Amino acid sequence: MKIRNAKIEDAKDILNWRNNIDSRKMFKNKSLINKVDHNIWFKTALENNNCFLYIGVKNNIKLGVVRFDCNFYIKESEVSINLNPKMRGKGMSFDLLRLSIEKVN
Image (cartoon, rainbow, N blue to C red; front, side):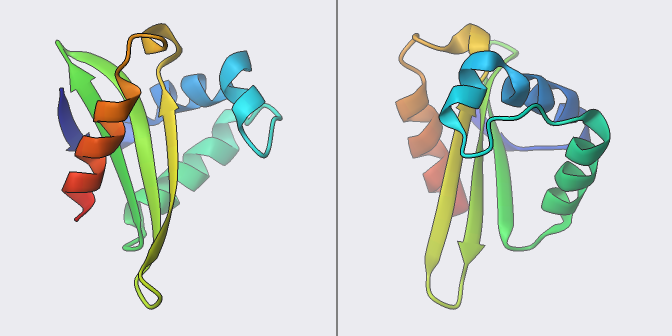
């Protein structure tokens, strides 16, 4: 598995994963997110120096996304992880998170 920075071309996949019914059950906000709002959020996140978005990839398949919202002043981060629904149950989330933590450090 490789970890890379998210890029604007990932927006559609991340929105689809986020709006997946099983994904929504795990979020604080369980409602569907529309494309316009998502694209605004995603572009802002990519430009935010306190936000790090990583995509896990294996065999050219996107496995999921990990987001770190960092507060450098108090040295804390909120972490969010969401797997590509097709990749759930394959034991990849631990490595996705571990390798993303290594990258953000």
